[in-house]
Image 1 (cartoon, rainbow, N blue to C red):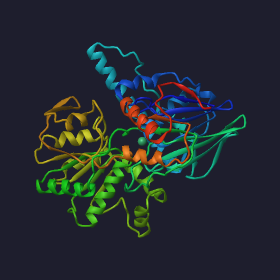
Image 2: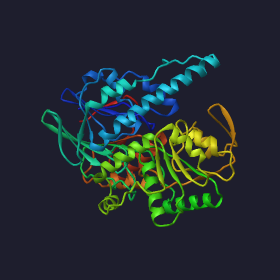
Image 3: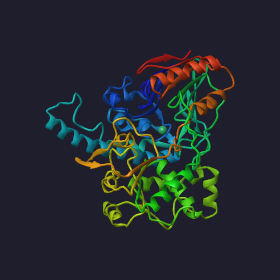
Image 4: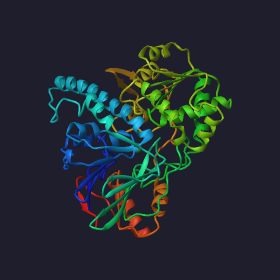
Length: 466
Ligand SMILES: [Zn+2]
């Protein structure tokens, strides 16, 4: 039995593994590399020929876990992909969006390179097309949490709620080879406890091998305080200054969380009934899927639905789909709340709203998520006085604010709580999905503190599971 590490090794994105059992290959996740310096790996040939894979298991629909599936399909993969019911509903939207962004980016990149007389070592084409996405979507097979599924004669799996985004899963794989049974647990991305909408992450207690994420393995989230109160304060401040509050948001989970909190604040009378816009067709579609699969959500949300309260709907909220409706937001007199994607301001409608508001001292730009290196969002939170949007320079005069309590990932203590729950000694823990120094430090802590031998694999390393 062999486990191949094919991404998110000593860095955070591009999650992919392949387990070889009795001559069959089962892939777990197939994500896109998103850090600028690791993006060339998206073009690497998969060392496992895609046509030889018997099944894929998907933990959740974030692009760094599912974003290369269409490329694998383009390269010959043709097996079933098992994912939870909400993941199956969401994954097409996510992959299609990724294909469209790539098509757009390639056009810009080509023009920029021609202007600067540069040549990329990689083809000026998207990794895959929308047609490849359409080929991939029918391969998905919906599964429910906690139910055993036989994926090959020797491999049965079970999905557990990871509490990270709607439908996110940890996957327990039971494999037998030459009469020997092994249990391998893949943590996926582990959520935070006590988050709204999603349930708490499952605690598993038995494994021979564990593959665990380590994104926040070296730090605890700053005490979040009451994020809802911070949101109310930001809105009331914007109202008193008679300016708009612009919130860059990711289309999945963060957008629904914001809409949910804002609804609670409106109903409780903690903020006035000002116009609130969710300006992202993708976020609007995703919100509809959250509602459809409300039985996958936490008890508080379920209770709202049972009490006939709409968690994602209230009179002053407008869900914006078309470009025309989006432009009309500019004519609404402030103050209003405008949520738009992308969450790091590097694409999408948020750029238009920044153009209209960033030079106004009465406006506020509120960040509610991590801003990656090299993104427009990062420049703004780092205090840039001028920024370039759509080729034009803008002075940053708006108030820049941040709320930190929205992370969808367990922090150091959350990860340790999860791994401590395993009862018997684990043969080996593999840490992935974390920057190298972070993963190494957590590996030392787990090895010394809990006695589980822990290792941080390298990219494309294969390990024998004995
Ligand atoms: Zn994730």
